[in-house]
Image (tube, rainbow over all chains, first blue to last red; front, side, top):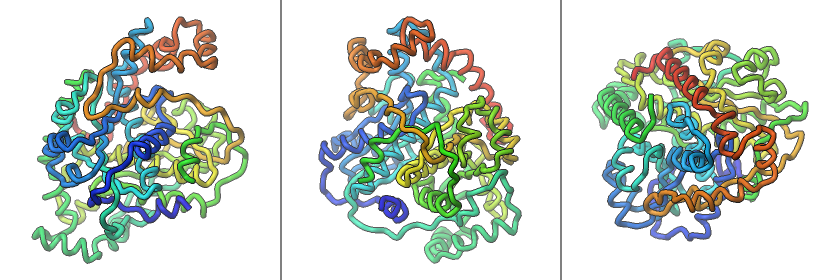
Length: 248
Length: 248
């Protein structure tokens, strides 16, 4: 039953004006907190944004994607080592948690929570959208949400009641992402075969044309995820991690 | 209905000898591939281990945790930028994807997939356990699985039919992980309140006693996640990321 929901899902970027009750939201959050985490340390926190004023403050950090101001609820999921360190220090313990490996563990905890939340929300008929911009402008988000040291945003989710049912986006054939026993690297022929259907989709052809590009891949490398931007936001996120107290 | 499963779940570390059919495994993988990912680039790959020989090769990388050799199926979920870069290069596009931000996006994709898989598997009655050791000994895993440049393990999941029903582990009260509008940092009193139930659990008291420690926090900082190990595995994972071609 639930697998059917999961199989038919798509991200939702348009929401009705209807709110999400505290009862429902709390149930989803409690459900998600049952997902796995590192050593049961729960190295994550979630900041809920419901206030329109705060959504508007957050919007620029998310490049003004309309979901931020139109979704009833936004969750900023953070790697949080602060709470655990405060507990440890109050209990005569010396935590050594200000490092890359602990950040990675905390990030994994936050994403596992986020995805468990999304599945639970979709099961209840809600629609969600992840905003990858959380790691692009983490510095701005930290400021708006008053995040202390050792807390860093890793992803943002907007949640609301779906106002439309967009077509389910394509996925690569399963052979593209699954390897058996060892990784079989892709030959040029494999790449042609695996990306063929994606490249032939009329929506993707249109995308190439609109952007005046020769190939779909160029839309990604020249427009959506350029080297220049990727490197700029890499530096920025690394600096944010260090500013928040992670040493590496 | 499904929320009930999700709410009552716990990680499973003991499996019956029963195998998981290809049909079921494929259904779960296909379902998980419908979860969100970055820009529909699907920057992840999954290596399935079913062979006992390969499980035994992987076991030391996971500190010989018994789940590795006793689970019928193990999934190594990897951040994979290799496939996308090969496609781009074959399509006259210049990818700038060998950076920290793209690694983070790929890592998020891999973890979202992993968690969607876990929820789907549990819905079908399977039990799962995450192995955080994937980021500790990624170098060894890369060797065993023949992972090429721009592919890095981020988490491992063991999956099988539950052979027991352990008690559901505690979680912090929801107030510990949820913040409204802005982050409310924890006062010493907050910490005492939020960790009280956890510290008073008899299983955790026993844990402190067995380990000859004064406090539960010390079990984490002095034994399970020491500064020395955290820093050692941080250096090691950073080196692995660089060896795999990520530049930062």
